[in-house]
Image (cartoon, rainbow, N blue to C red; front, side, top):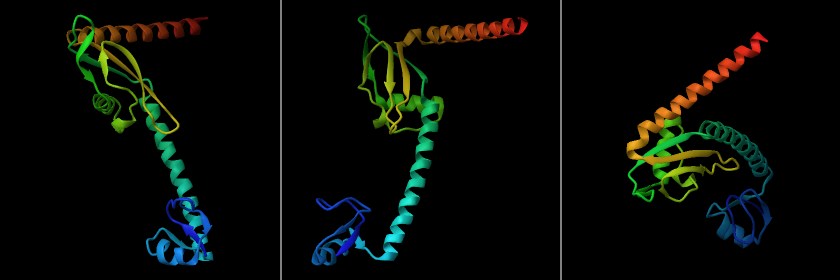
Length: 177
């Protein structure tokens, strides 16, 4: 008997496959448990429409993932933590903390299990990749001492302002020439 599988069946196939199985196996096991449906013309047409709908849904989901990835990629997150004289943290930066900081800065809510990094236990700069299917945006995590956070943020703002001013000055020079 030919049936269309609705889920993975060991040694027979995956969902959507049309397979030939024993009549009793189909009637007594697969069909009653909704693991397969008979391979009639109507069911085959229905499965084809489901496949096209699934492809459309998959492309929409991939587009959303690309948009979220573009928002996250290159984001800098600064953590102020207490640390010893050897630059080891008292505690650690966890994937949950990184997830919360990304949500606060970009508004993108991701699953913490997608953050591919072990807990950060030292001061420094880290590139943390985030697994989002085929795309892996990278987040810059900067860990400084608790008392140095304000000075670090002020220095970073000054750098950005100087870079913006230099870019504006370069644009003005190009226009004058």
